[in-house]
Image 1: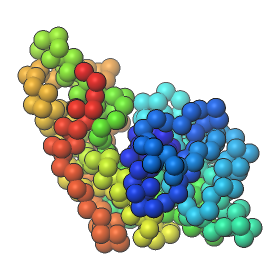
Image 2 (image 1 turned 90 degrees about the horizontal axis):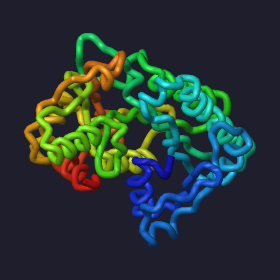
Image 3 (image 1 turned 60 degrees about the vertical axis):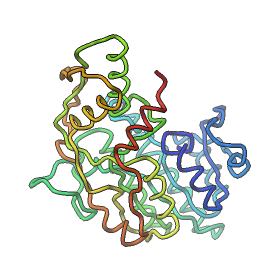
Length: 311
């Protein structure tokens, strides 16, 4: 997942820490163009297809120290369209990667760490409402979340069988400059800009009632770097701010930034089934282990996202 939304911020952060980085792309896919010339000198690209065991093993054989595993079907909508593909990439792909890394450890070639980037959506619905803890039992209610829990199970099973060092990171929602408008915050910004351009009085949205714990992607990338250095194998870590805001509040904040007075109107076509009403996390374990704290305010995150979008 080195060329994805988080990767574009994680790769420079890793290089800045002095790491030599291997990024993977699908065979025949060109490396992304977001790195600086200096960063490109410290990043080498390998082909890898999570659906092909031989491809995964060849890439795993190049790993000396650690893997931050971001590659996934990360869109909930895409996972709902084809749950089998989500399971194939997210769960089975992780099983192949973990097994290949475990084999390297058992063979004495290396002792790599696998940091699996999972999702807070594995927690599902909780009552009474409160911030989620890593000790809460997972209860996914979407194909995406279920497939990511499958990935966690595969990684920890391999750890028990092979001694592979595994830690799991459950990331709460994050956004920022460069995120695709397949996701809710940049989608709001795109529609609000269109409303301003067209003079529209109404903007179609999905359900605006859910409460979400939004982080800046740059803070999330820094959390991953910190866990790479200080995370305890065998543990699960929430990456979260601990503060929840409704999607309506996010929409109105964006409308104010963009300078448009359009009214949101819920469209059933944009509403997710089984949407989690409340998703806020407790990241005390991460903070105590690494000293990590979020540095970007929501206002800065939204402003940078709006500025990065083409008008």
